[in-house]
Length: 336
Ligand code: FAD
Ligand code: EPU
Image (cartoon, rainbow, N blue to C red; front, side, top):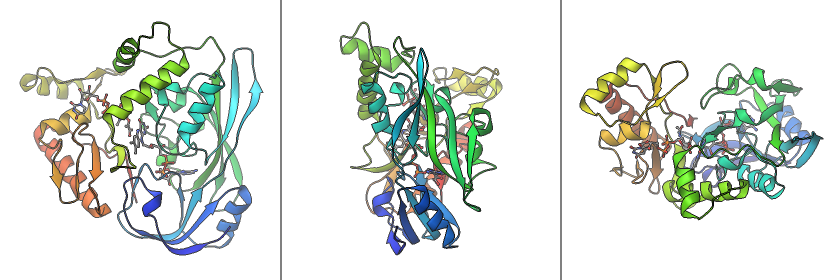
């Protein structure tokens, strides 16, 4: 493993921000990781696919790009398998592997960018399924002493786009592998998300399998979300806000058609994309940044944007949504 200096992170983040890492190395095994920690260079920042980070300035310390690979079945049961996956595996390639082997549970999360190691950080989710629904445990190395620890499900304290790794344990660990519980046929399919059933119908599929669902999700996502290879972005920039019912009632007075989803605790979720669109931001360009024309929740880099520019746009949007609706949006993307 080689430690490089003053390396541009432009190829390593999907927002396409051109900033530098003071020190940078790619790690392919635990020994590389421990060698990186032994240099004493601090802080250490773990980087996967760079699809949920917005770099706003040069990164001080050591950036470690995770390339730990490997996918293997570690336990077999009558109706399910446990699969251990190296943290540097590309998430969508793992999904395709699962579908190919007829293991179910991750097909609704097809085409989410990034690595397997980052998937527990914000408990990734899409189309009615979240990582926590298939998660068994993970292994992580403590960045201060190099020791390996197992985090079981309850220790991760998963929430909506949230886990202990975004809170108390933030920046303290390198996740090295994740174990998933996947079903053998017959699978429990989740087609409850409207777009999925509609797309299956258009595709003429009456009795779908996991491969059909994966294909439908890829189709839906490709039509809505910008491809980071063509236009820099990090997916949803903000979380969908969860608010009290009385906030919704107030909005309903002027906007009887506001989309909203009831939560188990009596509160409601209102799509941030709708709030942002109502404030007139959808498709709007500000300098080199802007709000994507087909999905207001996605901020984009039209070319040459700085992280500070994207951050300013994000805060302008937060202020305007708060002024108009009394709801303060919270960023989903990790600002570094
Ligand atoms: P990075 O961006 O590299 O890192 C994210 C954070 O995790 C950073 O804080 C980093 O330090 C930390 N981290 C990364 N790897 C490790 C590790 N091994 N150990 C410890 N810490 C680590 N997300 C969803 O949930 N659902 C979606 O539908 C979705 N759609 C998206 C669509 C697009 C077009 C894009 C660009 C992004 C989308 N995202 C979505 C966000 C993103 O794909 C996920 O958050 C993904 O898990 C990030 O993975 P990454 O490897 O790129 O992480
Ligand atoms: N909407 C608008 N205008 C817009 C965008 C959305 O009015 O410009 C409204 C529409 O009513 C639409 C609703 O918002 O029906 C929901 O939109 P969509 O189905 O596109 O989903 P989302 O809430 O914007 C969430 C996740 C995505 C995930 C999809 C599918 C968050 C923050 N985002 O988006 O995750 O892929 O659902 O499950 O929860 C990500 O986290 O990066 C991400 C892309």
